[in-house]
Image 1 (cartoon, one colour):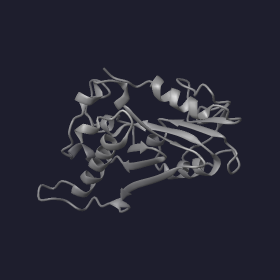
Image 2: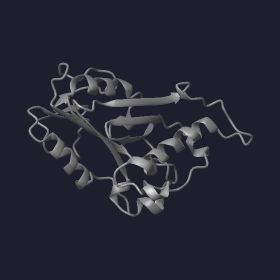
Image 3: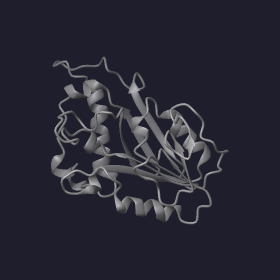
Image 4: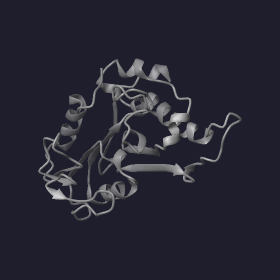
Length: 219
């Protein structure tokens, strides 16, 4: 049981938040999915072509009434540029990424056995108006992480994580990587990058404790 497609319940949350928006934008939309309320899409496959990793979003400060961005941030070499642009142009919005449970479980792509999705560069968690991202380095394969298939098989609710922001609760984000949030050179006696392990474990714990639909009694 695997859930790669948009979760109807989460999309309903985003649509309710976007109701009445005069300018609704989908950032990162592709041929497989476009937010139903979006008047325009922006990105490599969008109505407006834009390199989301380095180019500014084609809107003025606070011009976008609602911005939707699903499964895009985790693909970027450095998501800080896009996050700063989202915060600049959007009055409100919805950001979604795969959950840290999906990204720290082996086999979510089927026959392959690596952690999470092979092409993703970041692991993260969102709750309320905040999103935290942690670099997903190849050495994650050496870390003693727990497999979360027991929770993932309970249903679609555990495969993704999101945040909602607006004028009263503006977007808050943090991006962690080597030498900025944790240090890869800090190891334990077994040669495990313990600081990196702790950073990833913290994301999982945060998801289990605070995200909607998460099993809070299993932290």
